[in-house]
Length: 382
Image 1 (spheres, helix red, strand yellow):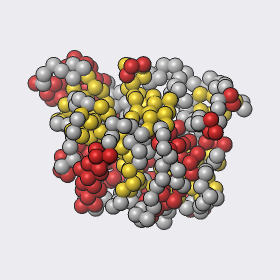
Image 2 (image 1 turned 180 degrees about the vertical axis):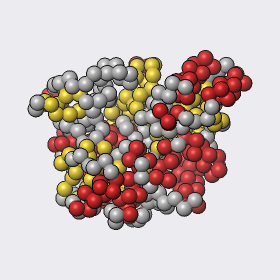
Image 3 (image 1 turned 180 degrees about the horizontal axis):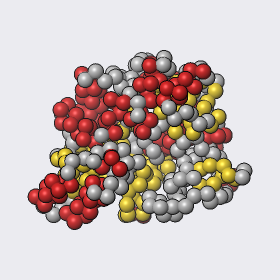
């Protein structure tokens, strides 16, 4: 099987690492990839035009395209590839709105009876500011509507901080058009957990629950990032809660999407808040999590490739999965200054001295590149 992975982060390296173990694999490509993925796959630059990218995939007889990041899905890559007769793991543009528009996602959750925080939507700063004045001076969550690289959510401790976040999003436009609308929602108490499921649109394969930690500093302090670490399985999600998540969240979601004529073949990521018996959805993502994937895939005993292909084919029911016992932890290393401004191009040394997989350690590259024969930093999370 010839496989193309879209993306170039730690998540994509973990996917490439696991897919490369499959006896079904003939050739592996990654666009654009990174310095670590280059040891497993041929890293390429796909044409920016989606039609041209699909033409490249057809010319290279790609059997399966696995889309890592959310942006290509929101842009409609899966739609274009499927129209060209290509097999893709990932939702089309309509399904990707679960992540690309927090406003749309909240509307659907309410419509489908999926538990989530109380909220209000605004497209004018003044109206949103007045709404904050009407609330108690207590913690509140401010979310940019569109994609913001995992940095569009602010958990504000008080009204002043909420207004500051609101101004940055709507007036200063730090996220561009993604901040034209905002969601202001109640701040839920409890503990967060990430539950990912592979789906063919009807059947679900729930992966081990994971817990990621987004704050840049020790003790969950400082601004949020795309994720500084994760572990799996998360004991917070008991078997009883896991069954409820499937019944009360994933099944209504798939039924609702199907009812709107939106086929969904790919990964659904539910970011949940759990407090006692209460489960609420904080957000949906439409792809593998990063860094959750780096903690989940090392636990998978089964061959990943036929699972991905079955979901893309709409026939997941015949493919069970086996998992290793134990747990996995992912620790992210980041450039100084991240998630704010940071410099790139610094050499990375010591990789060869890290214990190999036989010692229980795997190194997944995120923001890395080759420069003059050396591996150097090329992003915030490295």
